[in-house]
Length: 324
Image (cartoon, rainbow, N blue to C red):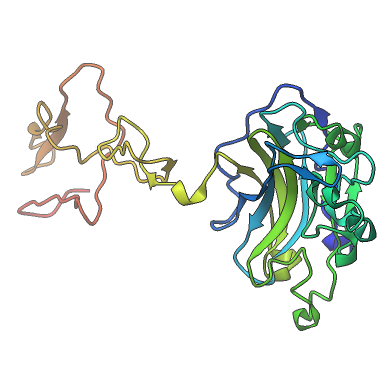
């Protein structure tokens, strides 16, 4: 069971009246296809229960995954991998002071029918919107109380060495995934996504979270990494070379894919040539020593390598064998 606990040193929350800037792309350790997306859940017009939500929108944030058995163990943040939750409005989001909860899985299901505004409270979660759904979600807090900071309705910045995490335990036997109910909220399930937060706000939301995922329900295949949400849009990523000095620089590229080529530029051969000179004759009887020189166009040109590959072979042809 210990293997299924989130690493609880992963975060602490600091209140931030000024928003922090999320990273633009996920951490290198996050596999392709795993992303956080923001969806508009309800665009409000008028009063719900006793609250006037005019001008508010309730957004939901989901972790998109790749396999039905993928399991979201925790969301967190810490000094090197902060959790950032921003809104452009003040207060940042709506919090129900009477019956609300900072974790969706803690919302009292019995109260919802009497206080319908509670359905639009703001919270974090792991796949559950209310207590009756049976997902046990816990919070391990560090030096600053995450629940208090989130409940204040202000932007949140988790960057402390101690750490805070919202986590849940694996609900079945990992050695017998057939015993698992993939309808459990923290599994990706049929729709390949897990709900991680709800925000009712008059502004636009941005942020990032560190996630821990057991791929295919296996702790041996877990990964951890920071994933941003809004304005990050994985479907808009364009791989390519982003170095303007490269021959294949792409103005459209938004993600450098390591394909930069510096040796095939059209027209770059002007002023560059290869010279073969006789260096010595009969130092070894009957043999001539030649030297090859790369001629450069500028005195600050630097020859970094000599290479050959399938597209540009490196060939040396002589009429006899070499002396070694």
